[in-house]
Image 1 (cartoon, rainbow, N blue to C red):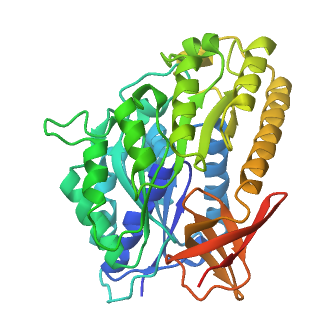
Image 2 (cartoon, rainbow, N blue to C red):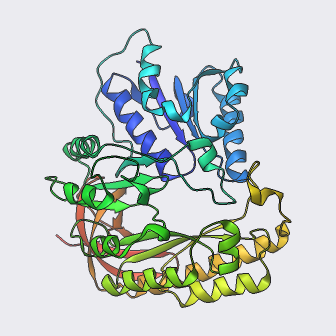
Length: 414
């Protein structure tokens, strides 16, 4: 039987695409393997958001060439989009698929195979990821993604609902909605499709436990949307917002067209409506022109905010973007500032988790091994338990009993 593996780099959108491909390929007779070095076909969904992402992709491709040279290699994603012609002329690459053609990728693979046999569908992840939107209509001065992903495009609501119903039938109890610019969902469609309308329709799906939203743009988190997601019985109390910085001057240079005061209002509002919700943020340090004063403003803002964690990225020059041409901050300074912010994030997250000790939360089993399990709570806390009869993907209740260092422990509530 023909086997396949998928190596996905970068964002949740790439992960959602990989999830869909795995489902389709298995439904059509291919066998999924987690090990790319033992698979007949290897799909690589690439990323080019940062120079580190570029390096990670190249490193993986070099390793695959050494250790599994006979594999049929299928490349897609933002890095391969940038270097499409080079990969198309590479004899080692079986197929290169453009971002705009990703929806057809599984069928292109199937068309190139002579025979297939019926096989069971093996869960690709413990949670179902669903892409509802792709592309971006904005031009932040640091970001290359609009150039390789194209304009914002929303999937029809009916197609999304159908997909979520299918995943629910397969046993998934949590669905993660993803998009390059999730808050733009529906803006490109002449119908009444909207993010709120989609979520309202999803609330009616029988058997679905939770909906988790990926990154949200504060420029489009209007009051009606904030009110809805904070009060919905099915939307996870976990809101990750693409802040990027805490200095108005840097936000202006980034082309974000938003003020720190807007961030503060949104975060305070969400925290007030959902006090135990996880509040996350993306932050960039070392953006061209970032002074010590700009950085201290960001530290002060996030330190005093109700954020419970943040993902910190050192600015990375992307060819073709305006910011790549500006005077750069020293790498040493970037590393020092990033380390300081990450340490602050650890402290804030520890305090958040300690405040949950003694509470009961619903969660999904994301990993089972040797009688122990990890539960991901609806408010984004990974809880380690010593016993769990439920299988991966299933929904359980867990009591948080301890939060020490980076680890949170608990016990299943029968």
